[in-house]
Image: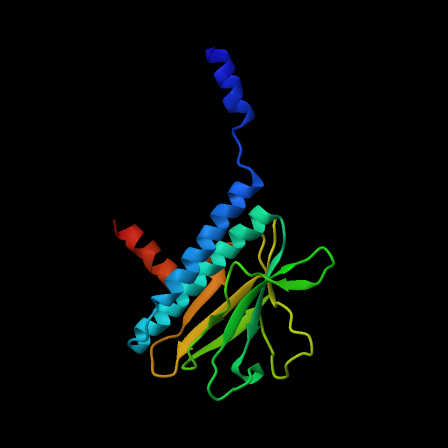
Length: 193
């Protein structure tokens, strides 16, 4: 009887695709729900929350690309491309590559609107992204691949009302989205222990 139960558990040790997708959907809802609680506050708090949100969603999407086996791209829209450039800030959303090769909206991760007081400077492969004119077909500029690789990028976040140094989000060597200044601070604190 013991041999049968061990054999049963070995045969069913993995997770089904439906179980994995259900967990991912719940995580997506949690990320969406958390976004409701982000409130307007002091400029430094607003910038901090924007960066933290970006890092959490970026890591989630990286994991989702690995689990789903589909590349997921990040579409970034500067205010100049938006319907109302004087009132709208930056916006980013996520798309997955369909079998046809076309990019389709990723419904499980909602688009994010960034406050107009926050500006972004984006570098891809160590080259500043030139976005002067909006292309006819909007496509992702950053891609998270099922292999765990990510387009090498660095995004500098700054707030109009803050004179402090801007904050940088980047992808590290292992494909994780990290807040550079916070990571450096944590490393210094670890050294002091």
